[in-house]
Length: 77
Image (cartoon, rainbow, N blue to C red; front, top):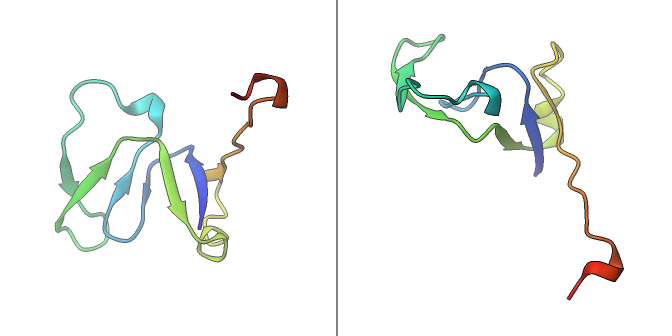
């Protein structure tokens, strides 16, 4: 599974993922699903971890691959 940065709110696998920029105060822990209307949890981390094949279904710019930068070898301990 790959990690992706959430650009716009995404509902996936019965959970709502929010971008880190939207995670200020006042965000509830649960919300109504846009699909079923049931209460679903809200993930405020700004990151979604899904398979690359599943990520390809998000063609409207909701997510982007998270580029993890490694420390240079000279800084490793």
